[in-house]
Length: 512
Image 1 (spheres, rainbow, N blue to C red):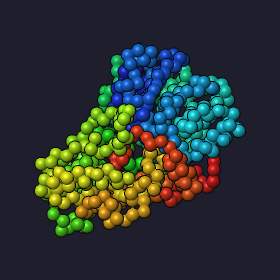
Image 2 (tube, helix red, strand yellow):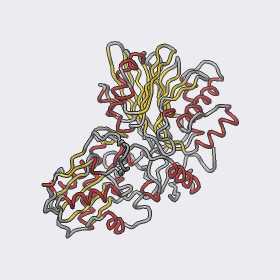
Image 3 (tube, rainbow, N blue to C red):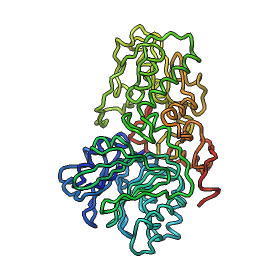
């Protein structure tokens, strides 16, 4: 996952972009970048690290202009630690184009071959975002016949991108002399929202991954960008939008609600916070059915994203809710000095127990999800060492059994604790006295209760059903091999495949 933002303002935009990226920092801590436009001239600064570390006063002074885009990067497997892949990406042909992207193209290798043989374009990195940039550039050239652009030509170009690209993508782009373009894939897998701010000098526009960026910089949330839709704000501040996909299916990523998004965001008309509370309600009902005779003294969340679910679960079960873990938010680099042995980083560097909440008690720990299981195992051990007599664990998400190919850097299947184990085997592996997983239909109901119009969801990491319909066993094996060879990423995915398909394929059979 990554975070993207684009703003067209009536005054210098650099501070707005910086502030927006700060609140999207949870979506990527590997790299950050901002690009602005002053007339037809682009200014850009990007680098590895957090937003606060990448940008200094001198960098901000150089980012002049009233419109621009920003990006925070969470690396997917095979691309970690490569500073050259910080975004936005730039290409100067045919019109001067900058692009930032959240998601993952599942046919990027085929597109690279097409561009080399047919489009005569060179891809300089392993990033699928650079592939997407060059596809858009080629389609803009074709739509305009290499001449002057207008809104119709830009929307035709986005339609061409949809015809050629598969996978998940939410995009913000700057077209020199024309304006800010944003669009979302035909399945709406990755989120994208539009905000508006009416000032005396005119209307300002914003697009971002989450509504929290809209709120924090003082805009009003207008709506979500629809699956397959493109929005264009031209250099005069005029807002245009058009549906650019021939067929769409709205299937947002379920992991946004479980873990990825901030709780104060609204995505596709659903409050992330309320959806997590609903998950807690359904989880409580499941516990009543499956472990009706278990005695629990206290419900304790594993910080941070599980807190709403744990709180509502405790309320529905009529049990006390307590904070039992304190999270250290200032974990820095681990240095290996001469003469010191390499030590495995421990969960205990991030979490510490409040012993009074565990001593002599039967506790129910609630987490948002269980991925590798190593963190869960250590947390259960910590609870016992703090004096808990019995330790039960509840996951607000179903078992994570399959690879994610749409922009979330899940471990390989061999590393997923649930890939080849039953729930009883997982319970024994992590050392708990009992384990409860959310039912996948209850998980969908938790979100659908807040927006009944959402019929489908992208839930492939739970059920192995890939909504784009183009994921084969061979593709998944390639992803597994790539991730097995890649250096582990810095990101923290909570506790850290076979191919399936839904009947939602927009592309038809075979390669485009």
